[in-house]
Image 1: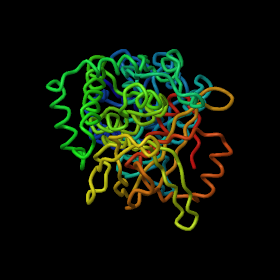
Image 2: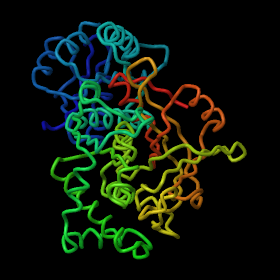
Image 3: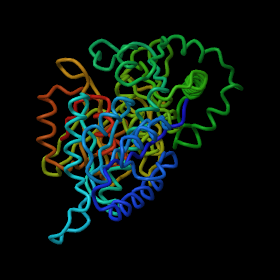
Amino acid sequence: MRKFNVAYVPIGVPTFHIPSAQQEFDKSVILLKSLTDSVSVPGEMLLTLEKLNGFLDEINPDLIVLQNVTFANSAYTAAVLRKFKCPVLLWTLREPVIDGGRLRLNSLTGAYSAANTIKQLRDEPLQYVYGSPEENGVKTQIKAVIKAAKLKKELENLNIASIGHTPEGFGFGRALDNELLKVFGARLISIEARELIETAKSYSDSEIEEYLKDAESRTVGLENTPERNRKDFARLYKAYDEFVRQNNIGALSSRCWPDFFTSFGTPVCAVLAMLNDLGVAAACEADAFGALSMYIGMYFTGRAVFFGDPVSLNEQENTITFWHCGTAACSLAREAQGAEIGVHCNRKIGPTLEFGCKPCENVTVFRIGKAPKGGFRAFICGGEALDKPKQFNGTSVVVKTDNSAENIVKSSVKAGFEPHFAVIYGDVTAEISALCEMLGIEICEY
């Protein structure tokens, strides 16, 4: 896969105050090089169409940072859009001096000209930042857009696995290969759950020893699980891990009930927890879009992501509790208790994970799902993960939301959102918003 590249395109005309423009150009180059090691920069400001077209012939970008280093008419922007289809971040510079004298840059008027052209020629929302290179807000926003554009390119190399079909009544998580390819660029790989069950059954005790030891090192109390279930869990762990490695899987959704209880006798919950710990986004109940949401969160933070249902609202605390049967990554467990092992809350068969998740000052609740009238939409909500013990049998996290939890629950239910959400350990609202805009996905921020 070709290396991700950002192109800095500073456009303008030579009739404004060139020393001021040069200072902003130099500072902009320093900033962009501090944010990514893959940025193409011209040797000088592009103050004529001839110089602009010459630079455009030299680059092959995945993101263009189009900056009005001074005013430039719409012909400059049109030249860029004619040549490239990648996302564009339009950057307006703050006027450096207001003293009753000469207008130095007139970058803002140039931005209006550029934006008018972009909106005439493109359907997706415009990425835009206003301010000088030394401003923290500018740096933060540009960094978020770069990360989003990089993930957009990475999605083109993502293999998502669907292991088994969604249970009856859980069709909201079912994905089609062509829609994933068209909207996200990702490839869907499908396999029946029974195939991995049969593979798991074929392993000898000696073949699963390393997987059993690995799980024991991550968890607390696995030795208390009946021997047969403990070993069958390790067999499943090996089968899933090898399938992931052989097929270069970055995210997977797995059928869980009833098959793994009735046909195998051991749940897959703890296997998904291990995969989440290893950096593979793994969602249960065959929710492909849940797995994709997790993958996005893991990419932006480099940390495991919680996956679960909103099950409880506390208006007094302004909290929403997210829970599931026991698939959370061991690394999310509160440190005092660790990743404890238990049995499934309904089937009473183990191993499953049993813990409350550790606190985090900033979390992002997120889901990509289907919009009622077609297409995709994204739920985004900020908050704080509180230091709470497990709320119910299984794994749980209690999120104090930035806005009214009561309003969030009522409005998102009325909007018809799916019952599965990713709780991402970090504030990645800006990155997710930028990505969704690049993909043409509706943003629903709560």
